[in-house]
Length: 179
Figure (tube, rainbow, N blue to C red):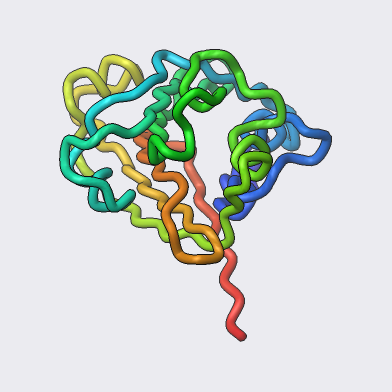
């Protein structure tokens, strides 16, 4: 790992952080950097078509969404939209803009929803105009889009994340166990 490089290991985001903090801040701190986030919005919204398919709700059906901007050493480095079925998240901290003590994974577990499996897709594409502005990207700079679906022990979807990030400085790590 390069000096100060943050390696994002998806498996870390499926469990609660040690000490009850958030995983992003802990990952950044492990290499002497500062990871923070700003919750831009939260609440019930019509499900975008792709999210509706992931969460198995009708297209345009209600879901709870949390939109965040992630920062590394004060610079925007990722846009994260997280979606939850309304029957899980309505009326909980997941539907609000306050930071969730111990993180969303801990709150989901307290609500009886524990993720045991995740599916991820990563694609490269050009950003939208708003993504380019929010991430302070150059005109010709592409982004990576990582979509993660978290499922419980009964294969029910409990969370869908859509993350957009510039590829510079990114290193995604996947650990796969067979058997």
